[in-house]
Structure formats: C-alpha cells, structure tokens
Length: 270
Image (cartoon, rainbow, N blue to C red; front, side):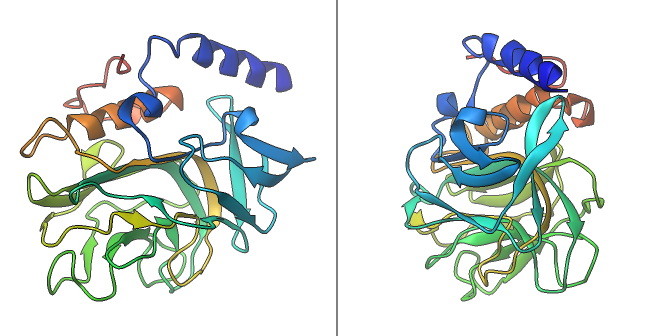
C-alpha cells in the first residue's frame, strides 16, 4: 500500500507543472491530506496541519488520523470529536466574491447541523447537513442575522449527500453576478439565491466543524476556498469549474462530473 501511495503521489506531482492547482487559482486557505509534507503525524495521528496558502494558522482539535486513501492518495478521518480550526482570521471574500470546493464523506450526523466546513464572523456561512440525524439533505447555512441574503436563513440542497460516499461539494458566492448556489459533483444542486450584502472580508476557518463548534464524523481529502471572483465576470463560474475539474481528476472522481462539465474529459491546465 505504501508503495502504491508513493507512486500515485509521484505521478500526480510530476504533472503538477502542467495541470492547474489551487495555487494557480489563488487559494486563500488550502488543506491537502494527499501532501504528507503539509501535516505532521505521530503514528497515524495527525498532530499539526499547515495551510498551504500560508494565510491561516491551523490548530488540530483532537486526534484525527490518516491511513485511509482515495485514488491511492492519503485522506483524513475524523471521529466526531475532532476538527481543524484556525487561531485567527484570514482572507474570506473580495468585494463579496468567494468560492470553495472540497471532497468529503460523512459517517454519522446529529440534528445540530454538522458541517463539512464553516467560518465565523459578521457575514459568513457553513455547508451543513441540516437538522436531522444520520442524513445529509444539506444546506448552505447563512449568518445568523440573515444579512447575506436579507430575510433568508439558508439555501437547501436539492441533491443529498449519501452516507460513507466520497462527494465533491462546492459553493459559489458571486457578488458580481448577484448569485449564490451550491454544487454537488460539478452540478448545480440548489435553487439559488440573489446575493444581497457582501460577505465579511476576513473570517476564521473550520473544517469538519460548525460555527457552534459541533464536530462531524467522517473523512476529508482536500479543501480550499478563494476570496475572489467565480469567473471572468457577470454570472460566469469558470473559476469554480476549474477548481472542480482539478479536484475531480486528482481524486479519481471525474466519472461523477456531468457530461456538460467543461472538464469532464480532461483535467484543467495552467
């Protein structure tokens, strides 16, 4: 297994000069469990994690472990008492624009809106399970004061996330095009909301943890967000699609992309 893992990592990184990566998109936080140089372990326990975007100082809460793999690349397991959280704030949105993408799976949930990721500041959001136990109908849970979309507390996903299934989840907060929506495996999976007030420019970072500090049982492969535009202007989301293409091809999930996705047949290049 160790030899196969090393070969897969070498194969991916040998192509990294040609294939697009989060650094090309200007990632403002980036956690990558396939990169053993970006975290420290004691045995299989993860003891420290580095933000590969170099903006956040990340604290490991509890004892998540590594050892599981996806596409022969290392992933991390969280047992419901563990998470990652930043000790300070960092770039979150620029003129209201923000997008994020990650690959996760959940093992169990409670009724307290367990989250794949979240942030906490004046106007932020969380990608959460919803308010039922051991299911993931899913929602984009807006700030508690309902300011981002005035009078609206959340946006519900129309496509649920299955238990113990690796899934790519992304969000698009496009202030330029006045749109907010979520996506599952490269397909838009919410009805969408009209963007109201700009998101907070700086916020903290939380992985497998919601804004009330409830922690999620499941696994994470890689996650990043960009405090910048979702595309070239207007309602364009080409940057989001590039991020999804990178994630899908790196982690062997390109088969889940819809046929209409621009990176269904090839990974994005620089």
